[in-house]
Length: 326
View 1: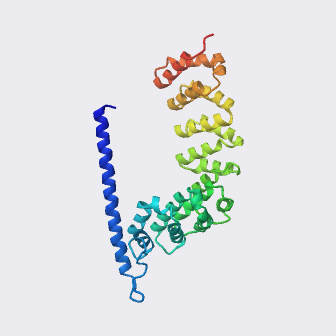
View 2: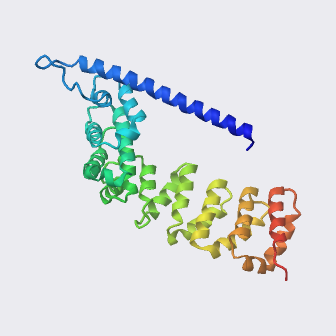
View 3: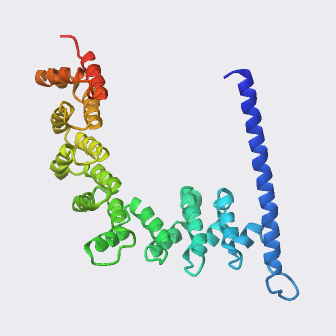
């Protein structure tokens, strides 16, 4: 970087820092004014205003008569500081657990708790109450809160929420999230027998859901035949086929190699899928065995001169150029 460019970058950085500080100062001033108005509106007690020394952030956060935007603003703009203080964590937990409070405020509060929980040592005194709150939210009437809580618990392989999801999928109870999402969350734990659910999601899901299902199938040896069929299926989308190839390569590299050789030299197949297969054989396969397959090498030579699929031809030429000397 030239000296002039470095000076310009430095000036830009200083200006941005100054603007950020000014914006924060304005926000804190506005927050103090909002808090003062909030305290003034409360009933007096023995001639004194209550909580006169309460911090503005706490006053605004806990005053349900204020617009939800003001309370959400505290949670979003001051999250890094309030998430480190026990009194704020306790107030935020109370908000999350209160079903009569604003859904938007509760959602913002839950996000702050999720971030605070990563500060493991500092958060430890609140961990049990947080876990209890998450389990309560699994049955909350607000869908966004349910999904966030279920996602957090499922990623922790929480047995209670896993059983709730399984019961819902079997029709033995309500599903706290959409069916497709429930399957995805269960699939995070490959110690469960999720293959039947993944096969269901593949059969009935959107393209992105099918791709997700195929990705998770790579953890189940019993899915090998299914993955082979998807990789060979010319009617399937390119993304799903390529993901099935990646999963099959992880699960059964020898079978992937056989099928990838077929697809990569099949001029009637999709050029992108063919290119992906050739690249995998070149960079990720057993190169000695790949080049030892004389029939395959001959087919690759034919492909290398077929300019009807130039991208495939180029990768084929690259593969041949890297062939070891006899």
